[in-house]
Image (cartoon, rainbow, N blue to C red):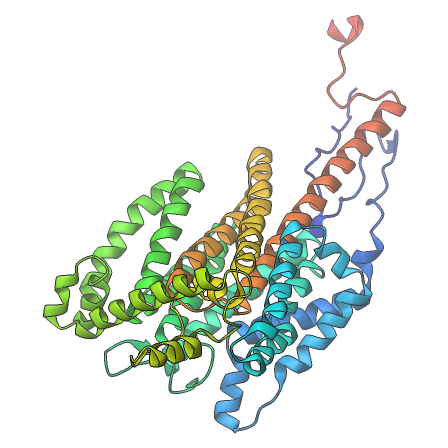
Length: 491
């Protein structure tokens, strides 16, 4: 038909994950049919209470990732109780707007709840019930809720992108904090002891693990379609500095985490992205070998060759020996107490007391493995729930990743890829750290649940819009494709 316009494609949607203005085929200035401007907005999306709770949740996430409460306490000498200010509004908003029900749609949320119940049931059987109760109650107030405030409050794709941006900005802020306050300790390892001597990132290994977790979210800024090249260049520089901080901590667990993350990206990414990973790894290796202090290189080198100890890495060799002993002890305690363990947070005390009873000194140190930390302190069922929750979250996001790749949606695919790279690298890193009760694990599980269901909602709305447009066209006898020419028009 002369002057007619084609129907809008199924992917012609507005931002926010909702359909764009309706369309149709026009003959001159008069539309032959009309489509509503957008599908009806779900009440849960428009709920202002949920939105306010989401803002509180994202502020809480930023504060935790950037250790803001610890910095305020260090410089002011006052405990601001910032997390207790931000956490309750987020949790209450999640409860009254149906967020718990949305979170429990995923098996991963049930698995993490099972882990928490195992922690609670282990308290009466603990070698020190009072101390175990203190840990479990604190975990419930400040860590366990992280899963639900993200899984229950982040429900649209636009909110997923906002959450990804919060993680990325937290990474930039942490880089600034490290640049200002991080300093080498007596062995040459970067640490934040000067401002967080008793905090979550006081230890060099904890700082490195946090950077491994956050760097992929900064990578997402680069992978976004149509991103300005200057921004990509600046973010690439920040990622390079983040890698330098990780290697400057001399954390061998974080180095393994980076290796696992690189391998994951190589096998999971697209063809061009694989080429970039393949080219970047050897180049960065050469650069960091040239710029890192020799003390850091020697310590990291003990991961591959124990004879580096004769070159000045005796402390690293002693650390590896101690870690091996603690790992064996944690496995031993797991087998001796397979149901309830020795009690949450009680491995170090139990190991010390057991060693003293056997006439030995003991290390009185926590196990350097998050997984055997959980199994030895809370029992094997708790470990099973943790692994099920982590891999269940990865499975959900991987399903969204495959669907997005199949639909050619690069934005959603990049979000899923960076999330999986982050969690995969972090899971490898904490194999060498006692981080089993950190907020980061439920936080990442909650984010994975939110990504999957937001992506599914986005895909369903896209399909519904396409069906609505095609259905209206069919009702009016209008074809979505070009009409065949009549014999007169053909001539």
